[in-house]
Amino acid sequence: MATLRLTHTYRFSASHRLHAPELSDEENQRLYGRCNNPHGHGHNYVVAVTVEGAVDPATGMVVPPGALDELLQRQVVSVYDHKYLNFDVPEYAGITATTENMAVAIQERLRAAWPAGFPALVHLRVQETKRNSIELSVIEEVV
Ligand code: NI
Image 1 (cartoon, rainbow, N blue to C red):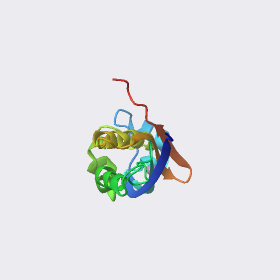
Image 2: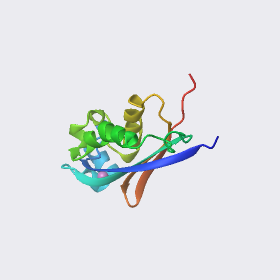
Image 3: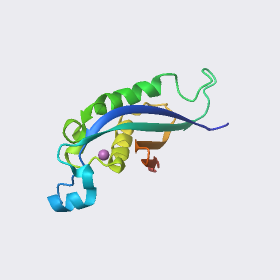
Image 4: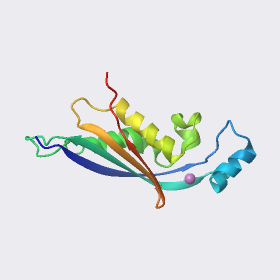
């Protein structure tokens, strides 16, 4: 049976400040440059989520219409949109909100709520700017 990959994209706007608490102020300034400015700055993020599975003969689709959108809205967009990530989103209380850490955190949020019977989550892309994006391939752990 054919296996297909489906990608949906989602958008949210959020602000952050890149600042590693274990480094000194000078080291943070050197490492992150203007992204370390004290009062933060914003981005229009685009998250692309790719799932892989067979076509459901009953619907002719890989995933039920709207189901993936509902999951992303609940687990990611409603939590991240128009927030200052460092203070408003719990996972960034202890880690810096780099695009890398965001890709991992978004993956964890999705996997924690992934519905039974859903096609597999195989890939995530978090785009922060036109020039900067992170791709994450989801490798299922063998239990
Ligand atoms: Ni930034």
